[in-house]
Length: 298
Image (cartoon, rainbow, N blue to C red):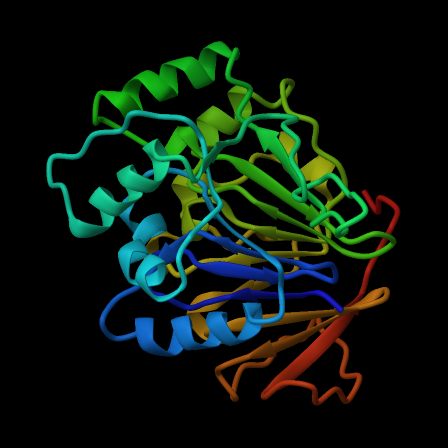
């Protein structure tokens, strides 16, 4: 059964998907000397029996590719999924240098709205699809073109973020938004195809500056919004929606079993009133479960 993990890495992002098929996906990273050992060890172990491993970088900000050289050295990245860009930085860190090598090299696959690839979303006789769709960017969209120009000029990189959807057949769905900003999301609301989604990872680590607008939330109708690790004073807590806040929960493991998602957190004291206790114990520190909704509730 698929497992999705969101690591608590400070004010950055790092996730993996251990698919039900012969696929393993890492989305973003923010590795440091303090956390790289345990995280790389876990990812290496979780991906060990998978034939295809891909890394998806939502956009070129340090807190989304930090320490990528450590990961690439430990388990070479042979499939690097990235929005095509020529981002520049005032300070070229070791991480950014490796990011550019991967972005511009022969291991890169440039992602855009509706793109397809074996075995990202195409099944063949060798292995099944990973169930990943790229909902954004539309590279012909004028708002995206403006954002890309800012990115390539070294000004702002947030609004070049890819929107990544992972869906399990007859099960849960998940959405990643990178660091898209609220105004940008409002501007492209009619240009992106959004459908009901079980778990949405809040944009920009949950900051108010990346609050998902109502025009998106009405279409997504999420059962849970995961709010990242931005400082509490900068967060939007999405009143009216069920949430898990990573500042409190720590690492979040989501074990998907048929129509259920069972949640485990690294903080053994974390509690969440929205989750139902189904007495699970497959991982440490179980906190509760949800049943996946398939119809809109709004």
